[in-house]
Length: 94
Length: 137
Image (cartoon, rainbow over the protein chains, first blue to last red):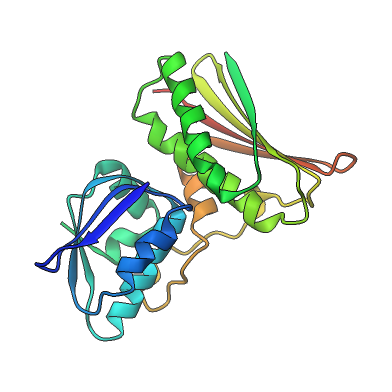
């Protein structure tokens, strides 16, 4: 299961597992973003390509207006996946 | 020791699949860090079968097997057309954000994570078998 929430300070907290069965839940929040946003992944254990797809879609949409996603606290497994996909060059990963 | 189970051809089978993998990993004292990789590989292959072989109503068989120092992950999909994932085009991971397409990364990532992948198709049974080998560290 995925848990995603947009905090009052504008930071998005994404935790749990972002697999192919959870992408609709994540999109409900990600589609609302319209400015540069920090997404805190400290509670995210797992992401599959379907999850990466919605994050990439959001990044492309924000970039049309010069905005972007900034990831914080990404675990090493997910960092490896982003690296294998060349996405470490496309996203800001703190 | 091998373990296998059939799963209904739907995305919502993923939770049951993850439980199945976790159980196998624990029963065989495999390093826990491998769970992420095995979950990822199986999810990508399983969801591809669900999305692209819509003509079949057969369950998909997943088998996990340890042989010496490697873990074999086998997915068997029945009543489907042949689709050899080992022959798919390479993904250009150097493209800019503007030139990137959303989607299409799953097979690329499976190939990157796996130590070996084999594809077989039995035309009499209309059955695809994908075997992914991952060496145990």
